[in-house]
Image (cartoon, helix red, strand yellow):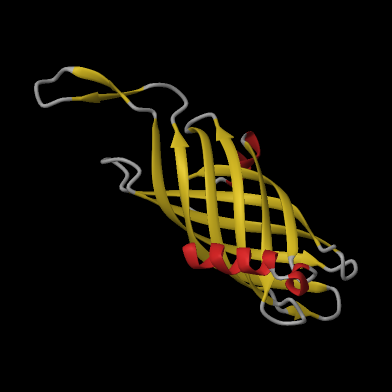
Length: 184
C-alpha cells in the first residue's frame, strides 16, 4: 500500500501524468457474510468512497488505484478505510469493460455500541469500540465507456478483514458499488 501511495503521489507531482489520472466517486452498499450470500441485505447499509487510478497503458485497461471510503452498518457501526488495488479492466468491444481488482487495505472499524469482554474470573468489562484492521479486497467490475471522460460502473467487492475478534479472526464483508470514473 505504501508503494501505491508513493507511485500516485509521484504521478500527481509530475505535470504530464496528471492528465492521465482517472478519478472515481461511488456509493457503496456493504453487508457482512459470505460473498454472494443474501445480497438484498446490502441495500440496508450505505457508504461513500472516492479514489484515483494511475493507468499503466494508454488504453487505461490496467492501473493502480487508491481509494478512501466510509460506510456505516447497523450491526458493525462506522468504518473508515483506505485501500490500494491493482485493476485489470480489458475492453469488450468499443464501450464495455469488465475486469478484476485485487489489493490490500487498512480499515478502522467502530462498533455500533460499546463492546463488552468477559475476563477469566467471569467479570464483564467495557472495551474499546474501535479497532484498526488489515484487509484483502477483491472485486469484479463492469463498466461502460460513454466517452473518454465519463465511465459509469458497477462493482462487487469482497473484503476479508483480518483479526476482527477472537470469535471471528477472519471476517467477510462484501460491497455492491455504483460509481462513476472520470478524467479531466
